[in-house]
Image (cartoon, rainbow, N blue to C red; front, side, top):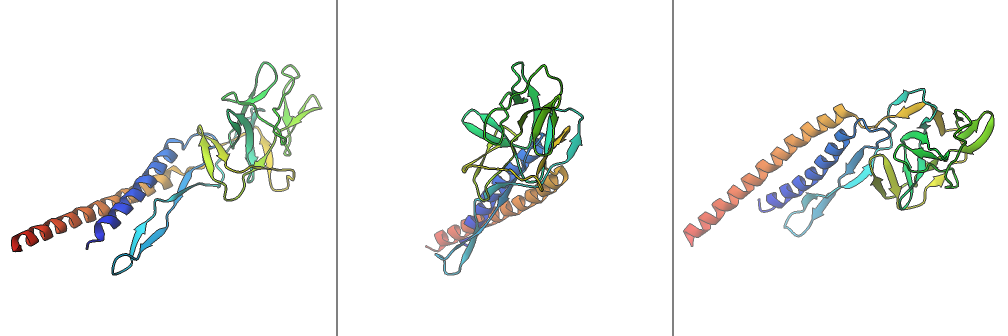
Amino acid sequence: METALPVALSAQLAMSKRLDTIAHNVANSRTTGFRAEEIKFEELISLSAPEPVSFASEGTTYFSTRSGEMTQTGNPLDMAVDGDAFFAFQGPNGPVYTRDGRMRINAQGMVETISGYPLVDVGGAPLQVDPNAGPVTITRDGMITQNGAQAGAVGLFQLPAGAKLTRFENSGLIPDRAAVPIVEFADVGVIQGFQEGSNVNPMLEISRLISLQRAFENASNLVQSSERTLDDAVKTLGTNS
């Protein structure tokens, strides 16, 4: 019974972290291009006790790769990615990768995100068009044309497998290793006039939340039971001493 308390506490710490990710996911269930956070837990076995004791790890956070729902907007400056790839823009400290393809053209002709960051091509250079040359057409390979003339190409990038990702604002991701430019478009491409929504499934997250609350209550009951047992043991030892 001496191990019940630390085991229950480790479970509560793990569930608290999971609760934070669920709350963040639900809050961003309508955020364009948002990638849901998931957590992978591992079993930690302690051999210091007479019998092996299993504890819950703190958990490793990763981002879901499933696609969000595609919505046709008809706006020529809205783009979505078909396949496993990301757009890129120049962030304050380097490239940031996103599935949020809502763009705009500023007065100087710079193609930028709705937050004002320059969208880049496959070489990392900012994209620029003629703001007075009429609407743009964007093909599957990202090529931008105006009045039949090429004006640049939207870059698509693949994040390296196993890279540690840091979130930037809501929909942006920054990997700890360089992303790979995509030059083949058989399985990946740009879809003009569409937006990709969040890949959060609100009903699934709510059901997870309910299960988590029940599990947390069970762990709390185990902690309280363990504390009562320890108190009783101390009282018994004090009476017999």
